[in-house]
Image 1 (cartoon, rainbow over the protein chains, first blue to last red):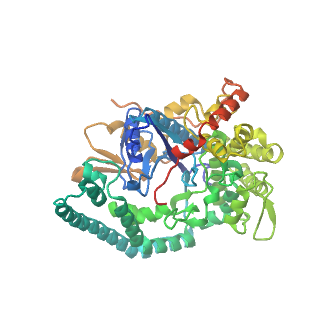
Image 2: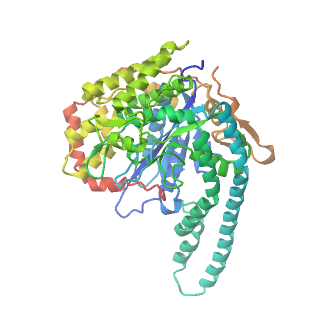
Image 3: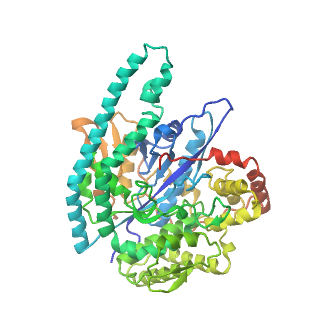
Length: 565
Length: 53
């Protein structure tokens, strides 16, 4: 039987940007420039290299990464995204998540910008823009006949993959033709007494006009056209891949883990004041609108996100065709887009630890009789709207149960799995005990969990410090709870000693500079530490490290490293 | 010369709570007062358009 917690796990966190200009008259830098200054500050703290990826980002000597995450860069959208290195076990991923939080928050505060640059680790702003957390678990995509069909389907998608590449090339050629025509038109317009700079900005974007990277490589209108053209170009592949994924990808996990995930907000929810002033258990879950999807391609927000498969086929394979071959492996990345960004260490440990145990139990055959919820999305929303935890969900067999009752089913199954495992671990025992203690407290005395679960802690603050008739005050408490600064309300509460700590500051210090052992991050981080700042060019991504350039470049594939010794 | 790679042992034992430094009521009062200081401005400063999503 496979070891407990042996799979790779990593967390992605999108940090909202809060910027206060130093003076009223100062021009606010673009989010892209704030990101660039953040990277400069990071460089002084930890070795890092440029990400070998189509997205703007860097990898650090911990093996993790930071990105500028946006779809509309010219419209000044964007957040800072952090991705932990690949870890094993909830304790390790908690440690590296906290190290990442501290590293990025300190870099933001030290960045050379004309004002206060702060980060907020949450999933929703006051205008209901939703972003935030993604969880990534290495898992078996399918077995036996299902794996054969998955691979056959990928092979059949190859013509659509090639068609998408050709379409994207056509879009790029179209842009080049546009620039040629726009350049010609601009030269003619310069002969007329017009506002030439405004015309240039409208035709070419700020980068070309100012001759430097400003974060606006194209004018906003053209960026919109290009994005829609790229979406249309990828639509046939997206449809084909979505059908294939729904039929065969992680089918057993989706069926058996869904009820657990739908009810998991009682443990991992961060709490949220919605636009009507009502308190809900979670930030992101109320925005989830489907079970399976690509995460934004058609405004979908799925529980199980397959967008990374689409990116691998449509974009990454264009640069590195061998990435297409990796999709045929039986072990793939399962991405869950349902969770919130946690401030409480215990909540984060529980969210990830319980999910890891459930995945292990499913793959060991202990959840074949897992409950199946009727109307999972509707049930998810109803659970989130009920902080009293009395809402009952209906199962397909007609039974009804509360979120806690469903969680207890999974707890019991995972307890049997661990008890009967030939090599049970202390960490698994800790997860089970904490899970049991949390559910007991939620049923009998939720206030025991202040400082342990985020939604309970936030509700405590809202009740004692808020003003229920003033939505703006309530929402400020909701959001500033997540601010990564000494003035952030979670930090203020932590200074009372009421917050449960699971990781030592000295361990966080070490995890800010060195990678975890026995994962691909170990090798990636070692190369970055050795070669960052050296004369040799180095770039890294999740799959490979490239040393040098051109024909003499050496490629180190990371998949063969990082197996547990 | 590069630093020697240090392997971090797995953390599975919870750390003890830090000693209390600020009374709870004082912390609550601090949050209460700060939350009422121009909350609209704070909410506006923290708006985060993802851009097109």
